[in-house]
Amino acid sequence: MAINEEAQEPNTGQLNSVQLNIVTVIDLHRAVKTGTVKNTLYMMDNSVGKQGQGTAHLQTVCKPGQVINWIIYAMDSEKRPDGTWPPMPKINNIVFLDDEIGDEDDVSEHKIMTELKIYGGPDMMRDPFCPVYYYWAGIVLPDLNPGVYNYRFVLELQREDGEKVYLDTVEKPSLKVIPITAEQR
Image (tube, rainbow, N blue to C red; front, side, top):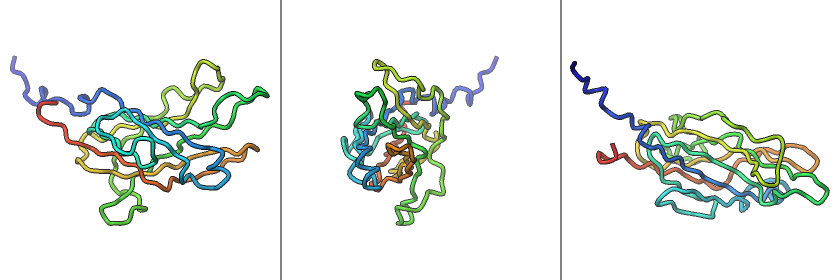
């Protein structure tokens, strides 16, 4: 039986089994009070070669086909003395920007990622021993060209009275997509 050589070619999306986590901590009270998330975000990730750790300008190094989980926490997320929980921030969307034309605020015409729908969802019941958070997950397109891709968050925050507030990030974090080498195939 002849082996089809094309069938032996690895799928580059399968080569990146390590998922990256980008954790964002937000000063929710300050953001809601000022109506902006400027100077309220602190981002960290588990990528190799990242830049801007602990700032809102984090640059995450990733590969085509890699899964990325964006997780967001409020600084004040502990149960209150009255037994209630504070509002939790939510990433409604991640918008990639088209820097090629020189306008950082224009939405990219090219797709960068495929969104992975929530596959576990935040628990409605909170427990002091289990973290509860919202997240946004996606997979970098397997055929995406190497480069730096800036993005912004569309965040859903909540005031103490329950009213929702929607804010976009001012600072532009980014993904630095690096090529997959022949040795990694």
